[in-house]
Each structure stands twice: as structure tokens, then as C-alpha cells.
Length: 212
Image (tube, one colour):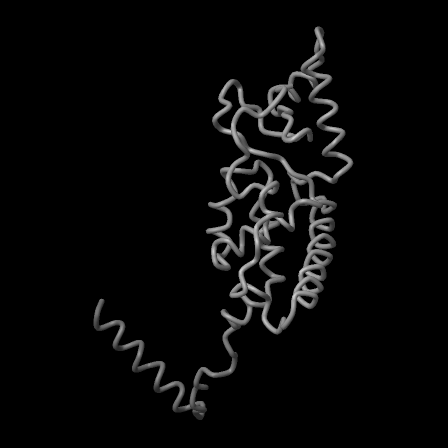
């Protein structure tokens, strides 16, 4: 285990997000006061947590997302694996994949640095995901999936495209900015009698054959 983090926590990390003020221009639409905004964000968080829990429990999803319990259990296992003199194959895998550092007195799970302490990527549990995604989304002006992934993948080892998409489906302001195209606006083909339709097909076929 690394005793302390010699490098400052990366700009925009989940430790700093909680202190970032939200700009008025990024308030959810229809929100007129702080209490309403907090309620809206709380509703978004609750819906996101339900969705991400279903995603993690899905057998078809190769989950990188930890439950809170699994997150702290993994920290314990990594510490034990690194302290053991005689390691099992599981211990070697744990030690090769993860490291544990202390940030302001709190243990955090990170991607194994292999001596490269200038490149730290954090692992987070699912209860932390919403605030990370929400604050990143606001900080880049309601950027979409690609921009969010680019912003986050250098800082976190398990923030995936799937969880980003889950979050974006809950952003009402993004839905208002990019409404779904209305259907039924395309002109309908003119009705033809059978004989006219056959004539039209024959003309098209002759034109295509002329090119050949």
C-alpha cells in the first residue's frame, strides 16, 4: 500500500467536485430556487442509482462498477495481498491490478501504478458515480457521451460508457436542447394504380440498364 498520495488529487476528481459551485446557467430547466434544484438533483441521483444497480446485476454486463461493500472489501484484499510473503494466484492478480493510497486520511482504491505515481486513476463505487458524472457534465457545458468519456477516462478506471449514457438519459436540459425529431413529416408517396406502378418500375429498370 502506498502510505500517501504524493501527487495532488487530479483536478475535477470526486473529492473536489463536492466543493464546486453550480452555475446558474446550468440549473435544470424549470427550477426556480435552490430547494427545487436540490430536489431535482436528488430525484436524478435516485433514478440513476436504481438504473446502475440493475446494470451491474445484469448477467450480460461485464461490470467494472463496485458496490460500496465490494469496494471496501477489495481494498482490504489488496492490502492483505501486498503484505503477504507467500501469495496465491488470486493475491498476485489483486496486487498487479490495484493499489491503495491514503487521501486526506481516507483509503482509496486506484489502478496499480507499477512505480508510475504521476499517473493515478481512481476506482469508485456506484454510490459515488452520480456526483462525479453530474459535476463533470456541468463543468463541460452539458457535453455529451464522447466529451464526458474523454474527460473522465484519464482520472477514473471504472467510469464506463454505459454509466455515462445512463446519466445522460436523466438530464432534462439536454433533452430540451436536443429534442427527438418529430415523426410523420416525410411526404407520403403518391398512390398509383397497379398498371401505373408497373409502368414506372419498367421505366426505372430501362434507365438503369442503359448505364450498364
